[in-house]
Amino acid sequence: MQVYVLHFVQMLFAVISRISPALAAKVAWFLISHPGYFKFRTSVENELLELAGPLAARADALNVVTSQGSMRVYHWMPGEPSPDGAPVAVLVHGWGAQGLYMAQFVEPLLNAGYQVAAVDLPGHGGSDGASTDAANSAELVIATARALGRVDLLLGHSFGAIAVMLAAAGGPPLHDAVTPKQMVLLSAPCSLETIIRRISRLLNLSEEAETQLINQAEDNLTSSISALNAQNLLNRISCPAFLIHDENDAEIPISTGAIASVIGENIQTLTTRDLGHRRVLLAPEVINAVAVFARKG
Image: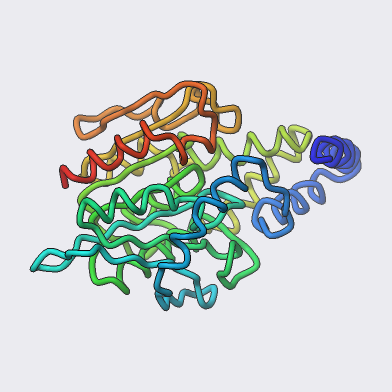
């Protein structure tokens, strides 16, 4: 069913792009920034939510308010917090997902002594807001860290990795930032522009419509999206970063991932195989590697 819907959408955008590239770009940006219009879930996503059920029942609700409204943030405390307060890990999901997709990382981080917060980005899950972009997603990361009084580990998947990097780097379009001790980036794209151009081609936009879509994104963010790339952002962040990407990721191919474009003394990498874009969130080797990295903090 999803394949037929995609083919219909591609044909529709091909026609609109020829008639009015500006209209095609406007509609495409609306779809990109309003993930609530996409209700389809893959079998992996259903598995992630099913496995997250028991953890969700144990979570406390953290009250976090941003410019987009009230945000849902799941919060777990370790059984034995350290005397000076448990370190904080903030988990950030990808586009069209929700915080519970990150749940398999919770228990290992709790066992490592962390308190853990998993956010529903604006317009996702139980959070307010109809639209999502890199800036308001990073704003939520910062607000969550402020609500908990600190942040030691930031972990982001896919689009969530861009939000995590922007929250830690600060700068346009943000006026604030947080300072984590460590960062984990799963299936991270090399840039926000890469994501938008890939979606443009998926939607079958014309070259002119794609250019106007980039302009639309920059108008929305009031910032050049070419500056929102992993190398530039990580250059402004001093903490160690752990980049993990699967070589068979079809949604963000490893060749266009941050892992292929970022170099630095504080960068650790792990390349997996046959996990794809979302099964990295379930894979024991990935979860264990993240837990080992987190314990170094």
